[in-house]
Length: 320
Image 1 (cartoon, rainbow, N blue to C red):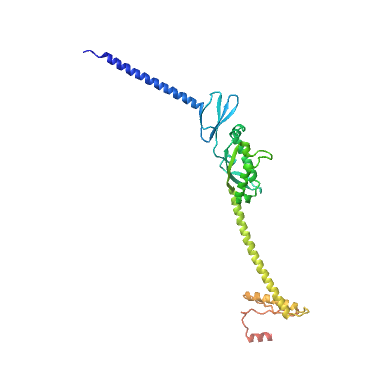
Image 2 (spheres, rainbow, N blue to C red):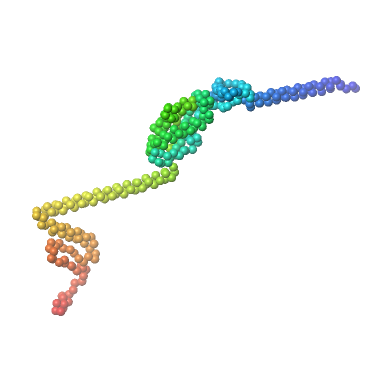
């Protein structure tokens, strides 16, 4: 029986043809993909997104801003993309970091503060072409203006009057020249200052502890002063009452020529000692009796609990 050789050869030839075409197609697709990848990687064809812009540097040093949204092409090796600039609202932290920055108030008190500026690029030529490293320059001017205003304030205003200070800083950033006769931030960088927020203004931890201790001592001193004032007021009232009593006694019992003043004074002194004797009777053996004559001796009485002696003993002592 004869073998169908021509049909087998045809099948083999068909398979080889399909394989060659498949390999060729894969090779072409790979080359096209590689070429596209190379073009995209070198940004020979680039895309400008919404609210973005691209700054091109052409051969000869000419710089051009591309703001049209969509795909664009450039000549490789003769042009290069210098930077891609967002045209949306952007934020700038005080001091360049979200962490609080240390400042010194007008009263030479150290505080920690933080703030954030929101701005938007309006003139790309001014921002990207007229300024070298515009973000670093803007950061320096922004920090300088804010610190000038903050450090010129008293410490109590920085803590309790943050609203007015925030508005003063916003006005300065938006419309005040950086130097006398110089441009404003908006004019210098081609931006619009959208807002400014003073996020935090606080004392350091050690200063807070010292302030609390000082406040505690002030409260204690205030309480002591109040008690001293009350005691002084009570003493003044007692002195006034005592003085009125003496004047009334002198007016009622004294003589017009003043000859009785010494006797009245001695009487008052005796009353003072009598009051002291009434308060502490235990162990007292001497009583001061009113005496208006200097030649009359004081009388000393025996103790109240002394035993009474018999009459016989007294007679014997008399006989002796």
